Image 1 (cartoon, rainbow, N blue to C red):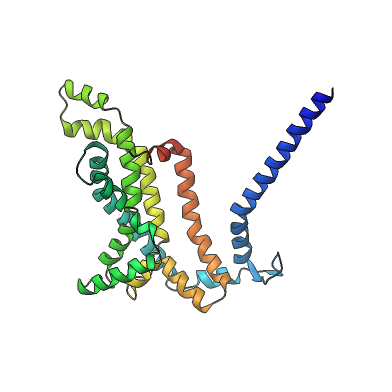
Image 2 (cartoon, rainbow, N blue to C red):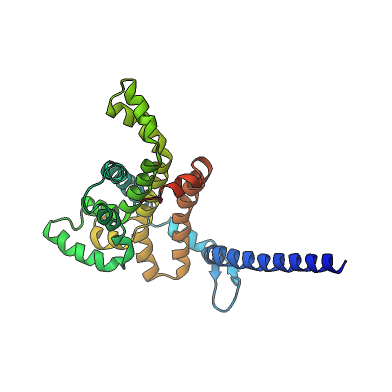
Length: 277
């Protein structure tokens, strides 16, 4: 009897600590989002108050009444879509080469895609800005796209490369044995099999481009102002509540696309994309 009591006590204590750990995770993960929502719908929200002293939609009215909001939003989606298409055209052949061929310095070139995400980006942008001045790319649409491409090439290279590597080449060889050309095998077997991972990489690329601000601010001004750039300028001149409204506007497409990826693609495609050897 005492043994069973000790067992139930140990199990109950373990579940209690598991509950505490899970609660801490929820607070860490959802706490900033909850604070962001309260900040966006508050009239007065000052420290150390946990809840806003008054609720209001005035900052939503202020943000939605901005004259350049619609054009900035349209520009953000145009840049993100263009960046994603350009990354697909450039990086998918590179990903296939990394997965299927062995060539000198292969690992070096593969890991070089991590460089833009391994260091503070502002230093990289300043250096690129000097080159862009020489090449007359400052304040141009092409310059903005190049900045966004550099930030997103890791997703579009690593994830599809891992997917191409996991495809059994026996399937391709069987198709070749019955007379299919290499090009037909690629478009009818290899590419469709890797498509879930490519779709995940495209979503990550689109979201990263949609939220990129510093490079666009440095290269695109004054001709190109995306939503993150407008958010930066508003935060400098108005309280943080206006920035919280912009943040929610940016978060909504992210939640929708990630929900789509989770529902129709799944986590296996994401995990497979990072199994590079």
